[in-house]
Amino acid sequence: MLPRRAGARLIGLLGLLLFNTLPLFSQAELVYEQGTVTVRRGNSTLTPDMGTALEQGDLVSTGPAATAVIRLNATTEVKMREQTDFRIENLGTDTTLNLERGGLFSSIVGKLQGRFSVRTGTVVAGVRGTEFFVAYGKTVDKAPDIWLCVNRGTVAVSVEGSKQEVDVPAGKGINVLAGLKITPPKQYAWTRKLNWNMDPNAAPVKDTTNLNQAYTDLLNQDYD
Image 1 (cartoon, rainbow, N blue to C red):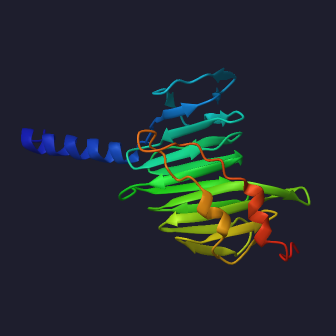
Image 2: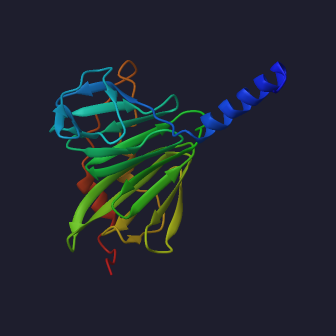
Image 3: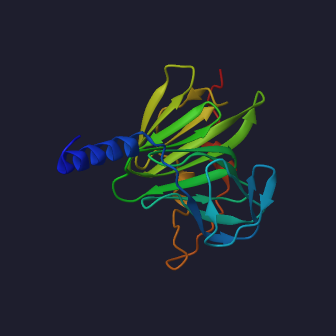
């Protein structure tokens, strides 16, 4: 039989190992809403209120003229534009959102513990600490363009199944043509109209930028 102190140390070590091997489950939270916001959870559709907990696997949607802000953890918040759908694929040390429609602002304050990424089909935007906007654009050859611009920090953008990967710095944006071809990072005039604010006590939260204006700089772009 082990001495009591040795047994206590062994139990403590086993507890630490068990904690490190258990999956991390967390909940997100709706902290602001304006207009119609719904959550699809399994076979049920919920109408959340401010403070409603959101879970891994939830599909969150905004209706016409609606806006929502969701706190994913202590350092990360996202803001949904109108007519936006995204699914919470994973929560915890590796947080992943799948944007299925519309546009999404992401803001990370302080040091992110783990990884955070937003997926749009084949496009992956991965960050550690930044503020960026990603949205669907026009559909070309049955596949939508993806717009991404960075307000703070740097975002690594890649296309799955290819060797393309581009670091987008603050003040610049890219377009992923038909979700396949990443354009070089550059400054776009339309991005200056984006509303990055997520605090309703500081200023209006809703973003009303017309994304069709983004295409005025792409008249000569080649989609091939």
